[in-house]
Length: 394
Image 1 (tube, helix red, strand yellow):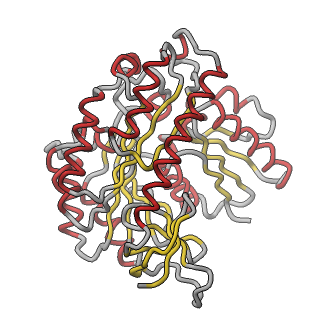
Image 2 (tube, rainbow, N blue to C red; image 1 turned 120 degrees about the horizontal axis):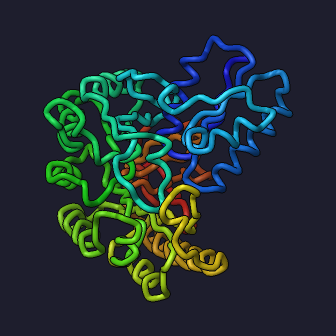
Image 3 (cartoon, rainbow, N blue to C red; image 1 turned 90 degrees about the vertical axis):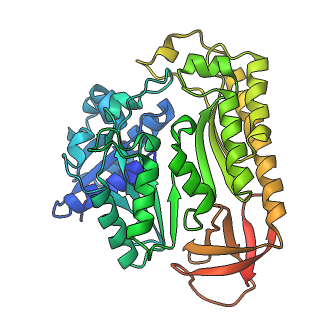
């Protein structure tokens, strides 16, 4: 059996998983578990996957890589099912070739940056990924051109800290200048999407492109983490609440159809009820329709793990309140899209895809037609269940 890769975590890990699969394609009886260290739950899932894989394929060698393999190598090495540990840097060496996932799908995720130079008190990822490293524009453009030549109609730029792209390269280009070059040199690319952005690092050129270029999708996901200034300081984030709100106001003022997503942590150490309420209000103040809500999870080795911890029941309850409020906002937003026409790129199961604003759209099951996978058509939105839109060809 060819190499099997089991991925956990971020889109960058998925892209690197594809690179591993290609690199080790000639290996027999090999399973690679590409782990994540963002939460203790992610590590637990990786350990569980290792045990299941060993039972399913007892003859196979199991190699563990990814961030958890960097930050907690001893734990994985002690597992009898594990044959070896592969560090993140060893995944692909020092190659300037971007990792790509989804080559057989309608969308391609392309790595342009790796690592992180920041020191957020809750985050262990810099220990797993190392310093920020950028891939030169020429290699990125070549990879995106290849994706376009394969017929892929959307590319998503990914990275650990995407907006930190460029300072380590000659001339210190910004992410905005990279996006500008991609759009110029790959004119046949229909859709370009950006993964999570640090609001304080969005350079003026990037902001201008986001609001003015129709090939850049009207969907911005921001790494906000909290809506309270004191908690942001204790997290060692570099933006204030007012800066985040002002950014969204500028973006939506110039491109009203932009859909805003955000990561928000509930129950960070020392978070009082009033501080939590500021995060709850941030959903409205930043018009967040894609809320990624995380209950705080202390990671050993991080400053936040040494802070006075909150009762886990309070953390869970606050996360649920944020999720409920986020779900209500998303449902109202989806309802507002009923009756509009969206250009949908169909991917999942051939009848479900994404609108430019990243809303999930499924073709009405009463409509005739087979697999739509890889096609992009104008779709009239006829309904919503609060999670997914339903439509028919316009």
